[in-house]
Image 1 (cartoon, rainbow, N blue to C red):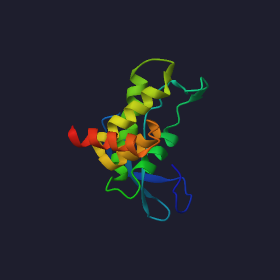
Image 2: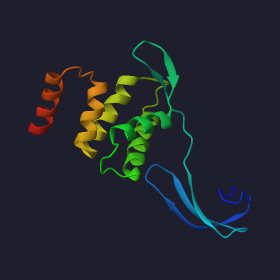
Image 3: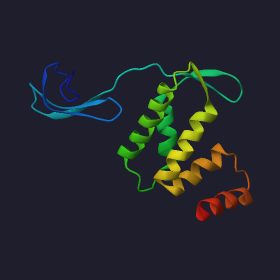
Length: 149
């Protein structure tokens, strides 16, 4: 592992923790500059191709998913750890499906359900785009559903 500060290739591990998705977080210290940094390792499992609404297929992109969720959660009291956890859960669920292709609708539904549990404002922001709520009445109906349930 190369030190992000001095680029030295030698470091030693101070602490190791495991998460529920099989990932490993390691706290390291550079042998050269003595600065500390963390690394995160996660197993690379096959993720399905995503079938978009227009019929095209693209590889699952974890960063693209995370970015979309970050936009919905902008200026909300949602921690980066919670966003990372949600992205990890969605990726794990897709991998555990064991399918080679999955509709983008399934991924969107996973995001919408995760955001609903995480932050209702972020949920509404995402729903406006995902559910194509293109007028105020449709947005109001969705907000009323959230408030009722």
